[in-house]
Image (cartoon, rainbow, N blue to C red; front, side, top):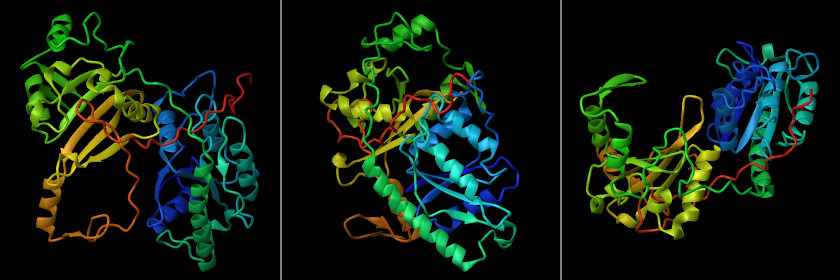
Length: 419
């Protein structure tokens, strides 16, 4: 289970951060907790809309992808800090990732009452139209006299406090399971698998269906070739070196842009020898042309989940290549420097040689049972597998993906547009 912990303070030293770090460490066998900071997020200002900024979109995606959220709030003047309130304004202005998201509130304070008044206000905020979180009722974890609560290693000292925190966290995990049954997944926008639109990098006036699309497109834009240098974000390589590097990677790599046009694959083998039987003539095609119509629903679900930010990666084991291969198809969302969706990087590999090498070198072995696992591996439950479809294979339709449910979007913003 994947949880997101939000530090509700922008202070450099925060006991609420300490509390989340303790939870992250102490309950690692119960869930994976990623901690995120709000201290660098600008104050909400609808006249200076930063919804599409990297910081806001990154937070948006992380909340969408989490099974639940834990917010650790201080108490300032009997309420939540201005920084936390501001972040919630951003998350209810044009985007609504907390809608129907299970949330647990915790908090630390220097005083006896903990953060009781701040937590009460935070519950009201999370219930507001446009925010719409499903906040776990009761089970308030209020840590008072926090300066005395932690030892030098960052652990809670009091046994009763630890026991109560453990109880509330276990209840929250069960609460997430119950809340998930209440959600009705909202249908994601339809993907244009025929790439009828245009984006800034679309090469116009070249037939996408042409077998010689690469040659026609090259004549149109005269791209750099051969020993011409290309400046990358962390290096300078020639085009030939980039091609050689991509061909040397033991993966089948495909790039589909945000317009759903298939633009590249690393041509390391003939089509019949590839796991996904790509052909040179497919490059430039709309992604819909690379799949049979019966697979469109699966392709739609994968791309929509990546584009929406519900997940950054979809993985699918494909056993149809034979018992001597452990082939995994991976689909990773790509984003530009501003955090906007830029397309899909599909990479396919046979992990069996890697597994065999690892077992031989370490002396470990696969154990029996319904699901094989490597001895000594973590006892945490494995993440649910999400089915997907090969980026360019026309031969077989893959099983339908189990895409994460899109949070229901409330039409009313929690931050008034009139103020």
